[in-house]
Length: 126
Image (cartoon, rainbow, N blue to C red; front, side, top):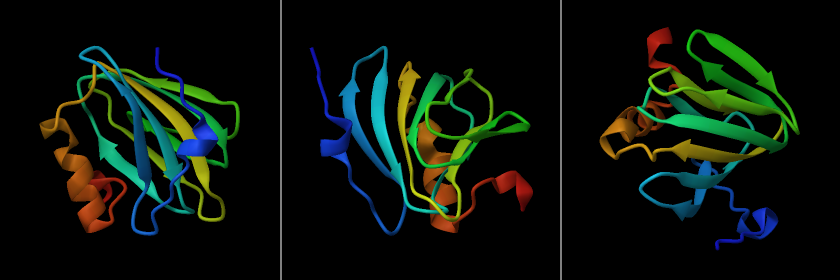
């Protein structure tokens, strides 16, 4: 069994969102996500489903062509292969639990690394 205290794992990074991995298997990955105002996970489309539970703060979750406003208590599920991204609102921190199944590959996270390097939430908007 893996038991984690979300508050004890809390870690913020001024440069980009902080993802604290609390569990990983071949079937699933669980991450506590901590976003300073305006920080984001760039839009990408891995071959895994993701469930996002917002614990605090507000922001948006991209699901394909749709953007969903999120707030504490919301749960959003984005299916595999759909464009997805998460962004905190400009005036608040956002904390969320993200569960992906199966875990994305390192190659599938290439667009995330590139989007962070370029400071682009959605490369399609450029």
